[in-house]
Image (tube, rainbow, N blue to C red):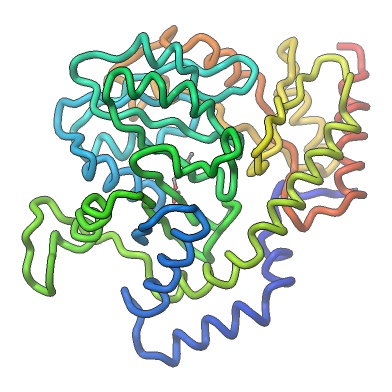
Length: 371
Ligand SMILES: *Cc1c(COP(=O)(O)O)cnc(C)c1O
């Protein structure tokens, strides 16, 4: 059985009528940028996240960029984050002229290690950006304690964790601000690019509103220095409103798929399964493949027609375009080891139980071969 790693066309098929209706409503309205759909989506998204304010922007990377500027990160400042989440915070910081400083990750949960964060705080640290990686909530209770002790704001990267909870409380509601991406493959995905910043701080939300549109307070009146053009558009907002209604059920299906993988793969020699902490929404189902067999497993699965992918193959500070911003090899040893061992198996709501079984059987068969 062929099992693609992802299949957005399959998702669209099940939602087609509702999405077409929403899109047509916008096309016929004659209003395409920052109008009723964005306002309504911002209200609905804030309510879903359990915070007061949401500001729609053009992407998750822009959400990080504007939120970090919003909390006062400036040129030469340091921001602590993890190196194993594909570099989006580093890309945002480069636009500010600020510097990423990398904390290591926990060996069991693969998310930010609060003890490592504590060690990396300096007099120049202006923010901490935990990533709820793969949909797994970071240890926000311990991290919040470290942040409080040093009086440094937390800006959460929730781009992979729509609907996740840490210690029973929604991710995004822990930090001063939270950043979301609505890239099509995310748990809540648009049919193009989109993002948002959520916050409980009214002044911060207003500042980000100004930053996303040239620094304007009113039309053609730029008051906030250093504004940009980073807006969520009406079409994407209308589609996101439709898909938001399906998010809880779709996250539940992701969890069911994860439970099935856990049941089928438990005890397989050479594999470590995800920690599976409560509140996980399985944006990705990621396993660790030990003994240097990760690439061989991925390639053998591909020969069977089963898609698997690596999230992510190269740590931030080893990427040529990001080298020289700060840390070098050895900065985060746990993350460095994981980058050679992680493998993502297909995990999306449209996947059938039979497909999950086919993937698990393929994995077990390949792992049973002698090397
Ligand atoms: C996808 C993602 C982003 C960036 O979102 P874009 O909308 O692609 O700019 C940021 N952080 C994480 C962890 C992501 O997975």
